[in-house]
Every structure is written in C-alpha cells, then in structure tokens.
Amino acid sequence: MVQAEITWWAIVAVLLLAFIFRAFERYYTECRPAAGDKPRRSLFEEGEEGQMLYVPGDLSDEDAELFDNL
Amino acid sequence: MSSEIFVNIFEDGLFAAIAAIGFSSISNTPRRAYAVCAVIAAVGHAVRYVLMAPDIAGMHIVMASTAAAMAVGVLGVLLAPLIKCPAEVCLFPALLPMIPGMYAYRTVQALISCMLHTGEAAFDRYLSLFAQNGLTCTFIMLGMVLGANIPVFALKKISFQATR
Amino acid sequence: MKMQNSSTISEKCAFLADYASWLWGCGATCARITKNTARIARALGIDCELTVMPSHVELSLAGADGADAAVYTRRTGHSGISFDINARLSRLSWEIADGLVDFPEAVRRFDEIKRTRPTGQWEVLLLVGPANAAFCRLFGGDWAAMLTVLVATLAGYPLKQTMIADGRDLRLTFLCAAFFSAAISAGAWIFGWGDTPDIALATSVLYLIPGVPYINAVSDLMAKHYLCAFSRFMDACVLTACLSAGLCAGMFILGLEKF
Image (cartoon, rainbow over all chains, first blue to last red; front, side, top):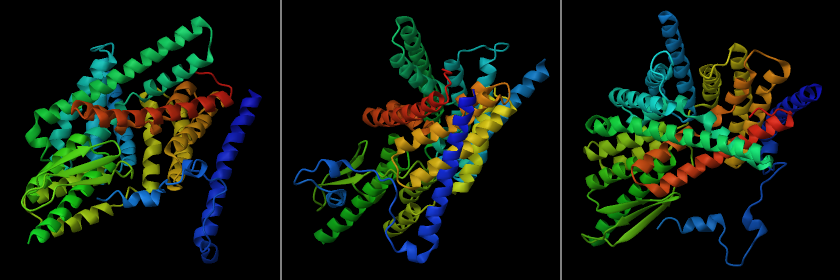
C-alpha cells in the first residue's frame, strides 16, 4: 500500500510539473516579444509517416490541398 | 416510503440535469439551450429511474432507456422551436447522461483481460463479461437513439422546422 | 451570358459544398446534412446530388441551363462537435429557403458562422467538473467519491484541452487524460476516502466517453448512411478503447485490479 501511495504522489507530481512547465513555456513564447519571434519548438515532436517512408512523387499535405477544391 | 421515492426521483433528475449541462458544454451547445437540455435530461433520467426501480416497474435497462429516450424525444421536439434550435441540439446533450459509458469501457477492459489471462476459466469469465457488457452497451445505444428519433420523425412538421 | 451563369452556378455549388462540409465537421447527422443542403440547392435553383463520405463531401452538378457538369469535393473539417454551429447553419438554410436572404448575404452570414467562437475553456472546465461529479452520484457514489471525481476531472480535462490545443493526436490525448484522471481518483482506494472508492474510479473517466459520435452513428444507421455510421462508430470505439487503455494503465501502475 505504501508503494501505491508513493506512486500516486509521483503521478500527481508529474501532472503538476507538466502544467507548470507548460505555463512557463507559454509565458516565454507568448508574453515575451523577443522570444516570440523564434519558431516554437517543442521538446517532443510527433513525426509523420511521410518523413520516415518517402517515395519520389509523394505529395506533401500542402500540395494535396491544391487538388481538393475542384 | 413514497416520499423517499419522490426524493430519490428528484435527486436523480437534478444530478442528471447538472450532468447534461456540463457534457453539453463540451459539445459547444448554445447557452440558450442549457436550460432546455437540463430539463429534458432530468425528465428522461427520472423516467428511466422510475422504470428501472424494482419497487415500481423493474424494467430491464434497455427497455427503460428506450422509453426514457422517447420521453426525451417528445420533449425535445416540443421545446426546440422555443429556442430556435434543431431538435437534436436539445436531444443529444439530454441523452448524454444515459449513455452507457461504463458498459463501453468495461467491454474494452474485459477484452484486455481476456488477453492477460490465459487460464480457460478466467478467459471464459472475461469473454462472458466482454459479451455481456458489449451487447448491453450496443442495445442501450440502439434503443436510446431509436426511442429519441421516433418522436422526431413522427412530429416531422415541428421538428424539421424548429429553426425556421 | 453563359459564362456569367456558369460562374454564378459555380459559386453557388462551391458554397453548397462548403456548407455541407462544415455541417459534417460540426457533427451533424447525415440526414440533416443532406436535408439542409437539398433545401438550399432547391432555393438557389441548382440541380445537384450530394454524396456524404466519412472524410469528404461531394456535390455533383448535373450540367443543365448552360452550366457544365462538375463535381465539387470538400474535405470534411475535424473542428470538433458544435451544436451552436449546427443550429446556426440550419437556421441559415431556412433563411435561404424562405427567401429572407439573397445569395451574397447568405455567403456573408456563412462566413460569420464559420468564425463562431467555441464555448470558453474556463466555462467548459467549470461545468464539466460538477457534471462528472453528478454522474458519480447517479451511479451511487457518496460525497467523498463525488469530490474525488471532481478533482480528477479538473485535473484531466485541462490536460485534454492543452493537448488538443497543441495539436496532439486525439487518441493519445484521451489515453493520457484517462490515465491521469483514473490515477488521481484511485486515491480514494489508496487513502480510504469515503465508502464508494470503486464508483469514484469507475466514473472518473466518463467525461471522456464520446457520447455524441455514438448517437450520431446510430442516427446515421437509421437513415441508411451505413458508411458514415460505421465510420463514426469506429471513431467512437477507438476513442473508447484509448480511454480504457489509459484507465487500465493507471490501475495497473497503482497495483489495483478492479475490473
């Protein structure tokens, strides 16, 4: 049961730290004009399938948009 | 005894109303529809409570949900023109407190448990839970939406022109 | 004259296709999409057929009165369910059908509707917490369980809002939000809060259940739009599976096996 309590507090701490980290990140990117000029880069980024598996002739999402409005 | 039942019914309706307002705000329901959704949800949930109460009707949850959804449908169709919204704007949020959410995720939990337990007895038990929860969830959903839509189609003239 | 008629018809068809795409994106049933679009098409004097697919809508123009046959395809937006936009678009269709607005005014109103702001994040948070706590009560939870669920929802829902605002995958969002909500509500078991900790745990993730997609799926089934019904049902099932996985992960990590 003690282990469960420690794990519970650890989970709560992770969530609180995530919110605090997010608040700081928003402050530094949105509230400070100089920092806001730089492109925002996250610590974790999700890759796209196209970046891993590229076949010549593949359309990117932006190019595919051109073919949508007929 | 009877006053206790009335208190329980009132409490059931009240908490269903609070739940409906909250869940409808997630779906960006117009503010003018909150009160109507709350009233309809309260009536619907209270009807289901009464129909399922062992002292009163003792119905199965599927039949009770269908009947309650019909009540929700009728009220939704009648009240929607007052707030100039389509009937489903009042109906769908009011149905949300009756959505069998616990059956839905218990179905998935039972499926995961089937994979984690290799012994035949345990596997059979979780497979039975999977089927039981899955079928109950499916039939409640079918019954609810069917029940809610019957008044919409039966009272076509009112429901399809609610925003006119 | 023929070109002017064609361009006007082309603009009207483009408007119809955009309208149908927005209705789909805001979570309207297929019956409503086809009815509203047909109503507007009749009012604008356009003979067309609308095909509603899971990710696209296609408006096929028959090609009469000097206009070329054409197909207008729009990708359906995944802007999130909005009954507000649904109601406004439905009202617009009646205004066009009743001749209360002409086409340029209809386009202007449609652009205005597209800019409808969603319900404020703080307002939703303040409403959904008590809603989930009320849900806990409906399942027989005591006041301690309700308070636990309230806190768990107020912790999980901002996480969901933040991850969605960051453009994270919706499935990952549901998994994470369910994990943290379940883990926090498991505190009722671990620390012995109240007499119904199992109900607190079971109801802590119910705010994530995609109720409206399930309802829409059955509505589409009844209207014989089986493809869209199946698509919506699968979307809802996948999200339910993700939140179940988050719940199970939370319980597993905390050493609880309350199935």
